Structures are given as structure tokens and as C-alpha cells.
Length: 66
Image (cartoon, rainbow, N blue to C red; front, side):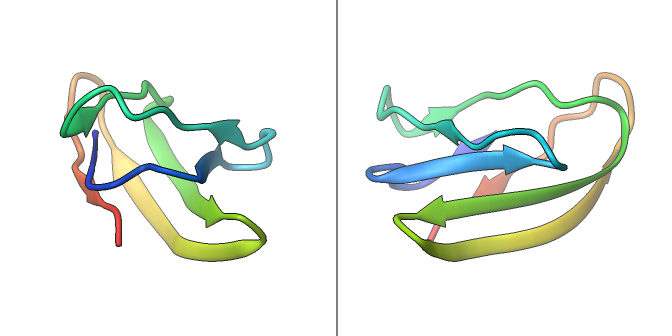
């Protein structure tokens, strides 16, 4: 789950293509596969979040956007 201002950002999980994020409220949910994932959030050409996360099936992980 992403929390914060997604304006002008894109979400990238692993080596997948970045997905433009939309502002639809204070929280936005994206499903990622269980296990270790590299999460990157781009604002324009700048990476504002670059983290490795481990999630299990059914777990909710909150990522606060800057």
C-alpha cells in the first residue's frame, strides 16, 4: 500500500516496466508477488524510493511516499 502524494510518480516492481500512479485518495493499493521484491518509485527521472521488501501472501506493506 502506498501512502502519500503520488502526483507525477511511477511505481516499478522488480524489472517490470514502471506503472504511472494515480491520485485516488490518501492510500493506493498495488498487488505484488510474495517474496523478495525491489520497489522503486520514480518522480520524473529521479528515483525517490529504492527499497528491497519481503512480503508474505496476504501481508499488507505500507510504503510512505516523500
